[in-house]
Image (cartoon, rainbow, N blue to C red):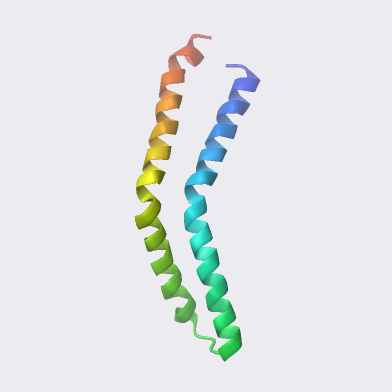
Length: 90
């Protein structure tokens, strides 16, 4: 395997990981921001107030995009396994 191929595989891996985690991270970011604004406006500083809605948003994001995430990861894994014999022959 050449260095260029290794970089290509690493780039594909990082891009796939970024795509897969982005919906969950964005959901947590939006809910966290909304809760922070609410806490600043009402001056309520309860820790569980920010934790519970974030968990709910994360579970909701996983429920909505979980199938797509699995499909994306399976496609990536399949492409790696298909390319494996050609990489090992070199």
